[in-house]
Image 1 (tube, rainbow, N blue to C red):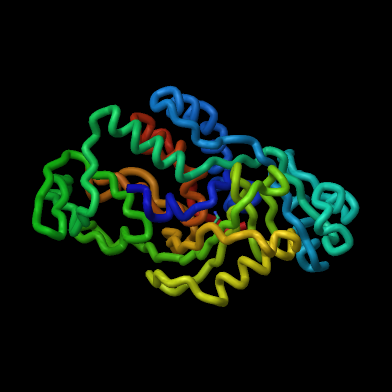
Image 2: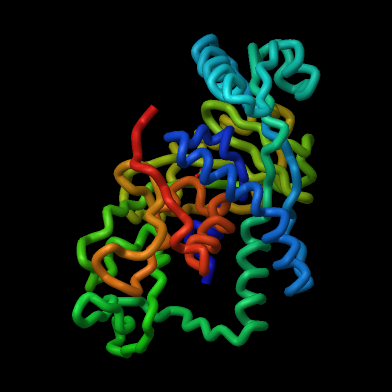
Length: 324
Ligand code: GLY
């Protein structure tokens, strides 16, 4: 439970930093970010857990003229809409991160970005389910959604067990495409992300991102992400992928090269053809609720997904995808 993309994620809550588009998707991400304080407060109060939610800010760092141009464009587009993002010159970046002084040529500072510890968040949600008497069957692979006359009746697992239910929430992440019994195949594919973390207190409390890696600080370790690979469900870590992450880390923090590697892992982002999530009730199969296709933003979109699946389902409307 929670061991897929939920566990693999870095926990960046970064609608501007991830440059979500089209505008309706950015609005969805920002709305979800705005729901986090209440969501986390309720979860922490209910479970007694602490999930590492905090305002971190995010600093994007450019090392080449092309990367600087990209950041200038990012800042101009978003600041023109009144969003809180600032372009930084080389000196300002060096003041914030002395280890890149003399090498970084520009930056973008996003003060409102947040982080949450996605693994603590998942554990707290699991605990909340336990406290509420939710029964979670682990290792029970869903073979198909059952229905009759356009109405959901439950699910059948691969080992042949059937469960009756008037509503089924399909939240199988990148594996959703292999669930049978749907009106149409779900257009989902896995996009592999390799990650790693290194031991020790991070030098800075903000998230730092470059064109090659992002660095997410936890209390006693630093997460380095992530590759983005169209290789299907291949579990392995590769020298190329891990080297890219390590080089991305050392580019920002050359002095961390002797720190012990704490963990290396792989996850699968559930990607859709247009990069947008699939949320809400199926138009052809009553009672089937989709909660998938969150791609790079599943942790960010958690609260808004909860809202979409709840009584407010009919209030959630994502306008037609149009690329900027
Ligand atoms: N959200 C960051 C990633 O998917 O790598």
